[in-house]
Image 1 (spheres, rainbow, N blue to C red):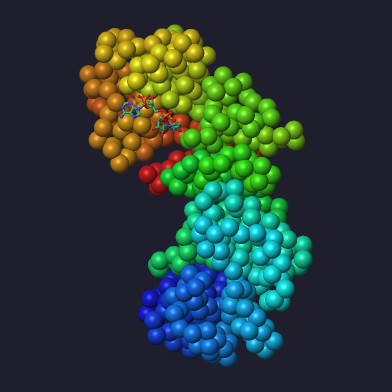
Image 2 (cartoon, rainbow, N blue to C red):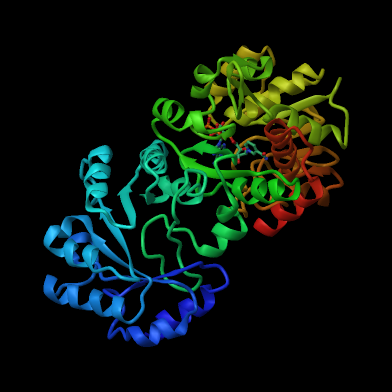
Length: 474
Ligand code: NAP
């Protein structure tokens, strides 16, 4: 009881209503709970057979919910699978209390959402609440379709894809006309996987201000839980006065995601492991993206998806803010996606590029493909380069004590580190200590994010705000 009361108090500024999970509150005193909040209350007593905590009889459950209704709960929640005998008394004698009919599909169980919708609609409750587990972000489409069907039928509905992959179904509830969504309290455990705290939903995503006109963006990759994009783009949209939202889409089945969720998106960022595979989903490609063989940004055009890459120019613009690369020798450490983008753009801007990598064969191959030099690490000497670019993850938190190259190579050099967490890596510290010029990866991150923002919205990003957000996030 004390936890429930404190959770309601701390979440009251963000919640429009509270669901009281009477099955999870020990010795629940409903009258006290109802008095504690002026917000509408939903009383739920979820049985064990529906994933809840109530192990008593169905008769007892009915008594508890009837008492809740008598005491003034604004809604009570009953389960579709509880059956007609359970539903009828509540539906026919509902009085002032609204009835939410809910259906939770257990993880791993197959289901037909259209059939669930028909069954739910037949019961005649005030609100239909449908929840299922999603393991891939394309499954958000199931929730969207459920809501669109309900909107067409002028029925109130909630549809939630549970789990991290279904985050978007919670954020975009208003876009698809849902009656509401369920959020976590500020100081309690979240009640369902993937649940987002109410404060984040309102303050970061402004989820309650969304409408069918809202433009949807996001980051597509796997995993994406570490992505800072939501913390950068959402506040930037707000600052620019754009009705747009940016979500995380953990995607494994790219084809399915593009076909099922793609039609609702205006653009999206692409991260590992999909940067290469995305090439084949773009109707048109920017020449830089096709030359690098990687897409990090997709934008909807009237002719279909246009794929581009903002990484390459972002890194070189960061370096060129301190020194021109034309005619200088640049050594790139790494032979992955970032190395490829940096090497391509540096060579295009007239730098003499060489590539060194832990796995020599990869460096050799990349150098050959881009027509630049291969540099074996064992024969590397400081006089071989003027500019160094680290395109490996070495030095990234939590292993921030590491560095990709010994300090003796850094004296007087310009050193760019693609790693942006922490903002000042050990490599950059050692560069400054040896009189070199350090260019942090945050500069690249800001440049590529700002370029994406411009492509998404047509207006320039607030760079100062972006830098402040990144510092707060690191
Ligand atoms: P990637 O494709 O996985 O390539 C990683 C490269 O680093 C490979 O060549 C790999 O060598 C090398 N490497 C990995 N661990 C190593 C270790 N312990 N010692 C030596 N070499 C190691 O990754 P990526 O997409 O190119 O990204 C590389 C870094 O750039 C990441 O830290 C990423 O966060 C950063 N990045 C930053 C931005 C930005 O905006 N600042 C943008 C993109 C990427 P092998 O070939 O031997 O495996």
